[in-house]
Length: 337
Image (cartoon, rainbow, N blue to C red):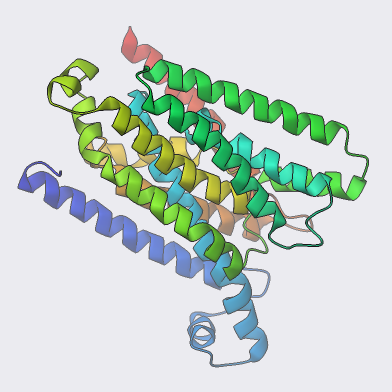
């Protein structure tokens, strides 16, 4: 799986460093917010000691927000790495398979029909339901004897259809309050997330991560070419099925709870490649930690620099990710000359 001992040692060192950074950024997320808290107060609150107000801020507001950021970032980061390895394209992103757009459609429809006030979990559950429908479509396509190009085209088609229906729902929404909720949800945020949201999404995210990691060996062989992979007994249908199912579950669950957080899946793998190379098997878990760091750090920036109306997390990641995407396009074009 890891190659030679030197490769294993290097990968392990990078994973340990990224894990440490994830913990450090997570602790910083608990310290930073509208109410200033020092490290002692935060640690006491985590163990149920200190003023009740401080315990509520840390345990009920900041801790679930931080954990959800780590989970969502990890899901997006590993999904990006797995999809880039599957399509052998450094520009591949979880959004390419249409799961994010499908989850957004379910959430917007729920808000349009006014189901959220009656049932707190209506939005994430409906978002996961529509994401599951898209997952099923893509899984069926992936398990057939079709090319990666077909899978990309179907994903783009699913995404375009979901975006079209989402726009249709927004267009015919006559309730200004529901319309505002739709737009804000689509922008992506970790605000007001609870342990209930974590309990709902975590099983799907963790299962998705494990399915993608199970494809690591196949991705390594596939990087040598489809013909070589077939000659070495790697089933491309099974490989595509594992990655599509895993990334769909992980991304769908994170989008269902947090809304759309763009470009994390694109950027995270490129953060670790300078240290680990282009082997897709080696960068899966490092990309997950890099994604967790990106989302958590971006959420800290959102809370730090927002005054009045909070800048949405998805807006910030897009502002940073879009120029990075253009840079990659130019770089890739130059390399192909």
